[in-house]
Image (cartoon, rainbow, N blue to C red; front, side):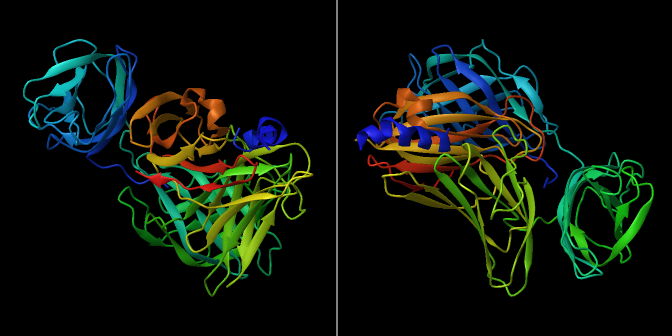
Length: 514
């Protein structure tokens, strides 16, 4: 069986793993490209409120280099911090009666407006070292910074608005969200879907602002993706009160409509059905979006998406599938026409099984399910090879928002670990900072070479991507980072793992948010 891992089965397993809230003060700052002169790195985040000159939520980790051993920082050192100077100490002693500290000066002042600020690479307090006690007396420098900056997203007047209880005159429903910037009177990030009713046989997804008639703070208009004449649709509704940056919940006025466009510009439409109820709100439903961090089909793999509805009424949801680069992944589910976006209505007390074909060339990606706050989302991965028993793993859908998490891994005695990672943000790239620890919590390896584009995905076997881990087992911690000034909303990562047995079978590994 060991030859299986070195040949067909292992290569296939390697293939398998081969809306916005207004940011108010205080501001979260993320370390960006921070390195020490001995080759070690530092990443993580802290919160700073420029109005009160206070720090909080410190979560910074440094890695081993030629001199320093790396450690975690969670405590602010109040004696020295300021708007141009950050310092923190470790929660646990480095050795008995000593504390680790990290100190850096900035080239300009932190404000609640965010931005990117370079760290000074020279000076008396731009370094990492050891303190003689918890108050950090008797500083002993160990290594200095050689490059890096901190970055924070700027506050914005753009808010995400979610449709709630929106009903159409023929029994259809409308759900989803869009973003509105009250300062600039602009719309973006449309993701509105309608379901079939007695007058309309098929639902429609709207992702494009209306090109000819601008919306306003009390009037939302969108069209479906333009195709050919008479195929583009229009949706529009008015609100009882204007949308503002402060958010809230606003009633949809009856009479808005879904319509058929006469031409793609939608300057002339033919009405299909009207809105008869509902509202829009900035109070995002809990777990409204759930993500399956891996989709694998073909090459022996079959993927099943399971949607479970425990409520007493039908629940519509939107299932979107994407490739590694974030582009549309069109596949056939339940032998239907290949598509990347589907509206799925899960019956009351019912379930939907969406099964990939398992045929054709191998392809990977990820799955996003919207309007999922009331339904369960699960994915199963089955590997079937002639002459070998089937393997299957099951994982639950996860909501975005993890700025870091930990997962066990095992590369000993023939075991191996697969890993999949998604950057769900539609606006910002993200750097994945990996730190590997052994069973006793000692750092053994760190890497910051993985950057995911907006809506990007990666999957790999740990032994292939990080051979320096060797034959170790322990925990891999992942820290979110930004390669440049991020754009709100910051959504973190979603990930999962597979534990591969030496016989070639596998099971799922969960992650623990930090």
